Image (cartoon, rainbow, N blue to C red; front, side):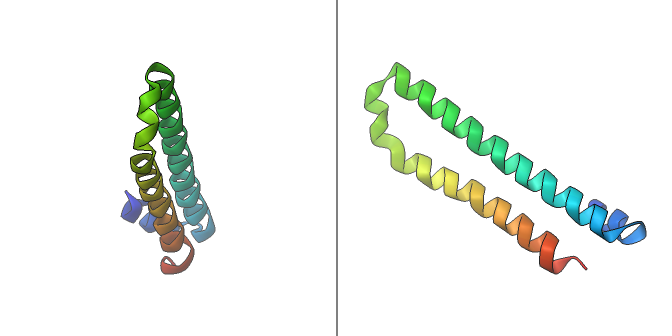
Length: 80
């Protein structure tokens, strides 16, 4: 999908394609982090002992953020 967006951006307007790709990547990362936090709070409300698994939550959140960072780097620096 990224290659398709990059090809379309090269044809028409490069800034529009980059902006669309970055907006999509950041929106997906924000929705992923929101869903992660909401489901963790639901689980914590049902079972207070689930608070001990917060380290796994932090690792998953970091993986989501790295995905957004890689999309930013690809859109901002690699695609010309």
